Image 1 (cartoon, rainbow, N blue to C red):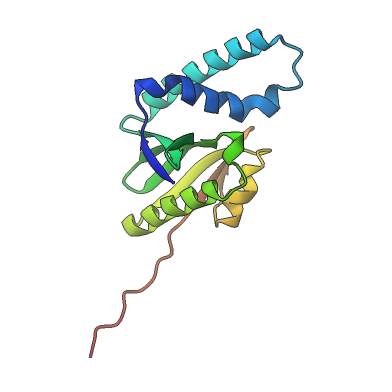
Image 2: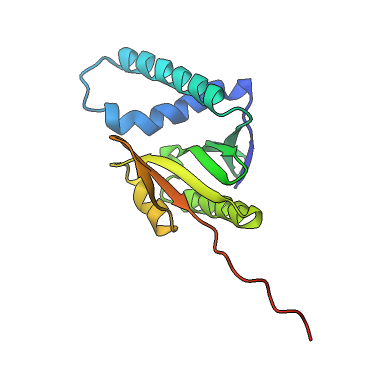
Length: 162
């Protein structure tokens, strides 16, 4: 599994990932398929605009599994924090350990740079359990979102050699 920077050529794929991440939420709505797709396209564009406006310098990445686009990972590095803006996999790649592996890599980056890793998650999102299993803890909350934070272990340097 690797990641590469997203390009304009990835727009349709990134919208597909967005739509897949919202499919369960929209399933009960009695809208025609075309109306759901139009809504999802509009929401994906609005989210992209918001991310680019609110997180200047962020990394927008395509997740690849055996060179096949599998999802998206959006990160914003700050001096004291690595913010996971978004992490989403297509359904065929969920539950196979790819999300856990990505999160562990981000935690390794946090450890290496002495930075916290944080993510906002909807309180009802099943991925919350994964984040908590990996050591993310609540650090704030709004009506809909929970801010989860993982802090790198602070260990003393090894004693000098005799």
